[in-house]
Image (tube, rainbow, N blue to C red; front, side, top):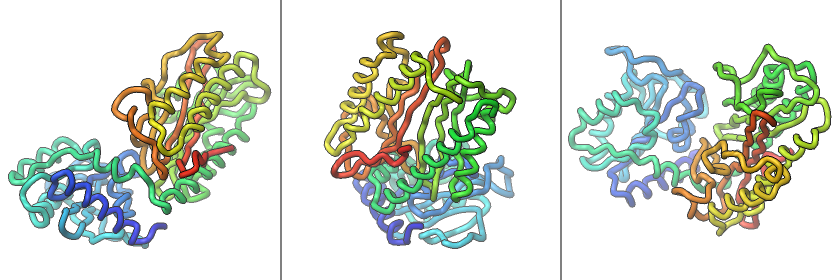
Length: 389
């Protein structure tokens, strides 16, 4: 676990970013409830995760259960707000206030600790519209402004302690994928394969976040259409393509990797073309993940190698399954930069200390589907793959 000095450095860095943007302070709002979708902001600053799941507001009793907030003045101490009264050790690295109505308590704290003016909100996607409207109505002197870009900037380059946590998480993800592959024998179900991966994650103290898994005639799809992404009623057959995109975390830091195999045997010529195309194009991009390179250069290299593949020569260029991107930043969430030849991040420079997930998925109903993805830390001397087999 991280020490309090790590969190104090993070809070100080976000204060500097807020001051540079003309804010009196920032409010960082996060959702918990074991979803892992919107928890990163508060966790990054405090080490606190809210496990209470979201429940609808009950006027006069509670509001915004399953959420937490940090009020961080540019000049002054930070405060964590939560509805959880009793916490296990280690305690959050910050002052703590509990209250059942998180929204009105947050308004009171903004009035008490921030002078009138612009206040940045990090975590806009996690704050419901009624709560945003409530804050704006009771805080006429404070202009609450969306500022998610400050959160992304603060988490873009990881500290040495974070990089070690990402290495441990990546190694766990690789072990979980190996467990899934070992379970993927003819006669097994997708659910049994998924269970093997999830058990490996949980045994190590990690958190299963989610997966996309499909096989055989459905391998071109991402996952089953119901809440469970895996099928428990269809068994794998020898020669089936089985593809898994697996994501989870250890100490909050994500792994995100994908593999595709042929069940119980060697791939056919067409399957080999597909498998080689996705893997080789991703690996070519990984080789370019070096300080000073542009995001657009990495994406272009991936695309060039894919276009030269035997698969593309025989089947043409299928549409991208990821909106033209070849991956994304990784840390406490799926993050910018998005690796594409154009768009908002195309001109971004790769820096040492970044962690990136490079991936490619191909889906053709007549041929099947395949995915390959690895997580990579950018070091001063080049790429370090942390999810290798």
